[in-house]
Image 1 (cartoon, rainbow, N blue to C red):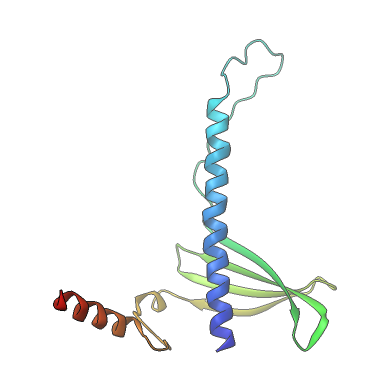
Image 2 (image 1 turned 180 degrees about the vertical axis):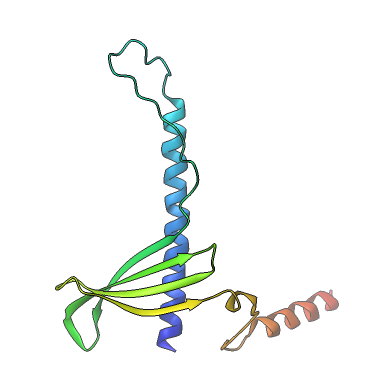
Length: 137
């Protein structure tokens, strides 16, 4: 159960990080576009172009202490390739720099599930309650 909570936490952190980074990229890009384009007066001309395409991989870093050894710090590196629908998780020992592959998985079929290993109220139970509530009104 702790593994499920941790995975949900990691996915939440990943989603929040992506949302935050896209906000800052748009903020910076709007500032670049708002700058005056009169660069002819300077000796060095700078041309700013938008990136050709967005990055294909999503990467998240989070650190924690090893529960069996609190002095040992571990970084979890999660890489998601949305194109191939794969996720890879690494553990990095921050003291030694050693990186270990922890898990690799194709999540394409996982994304097709409405619920798996869900606790009550499950998504289907909630949907049933909503239909009952709508029928009462």
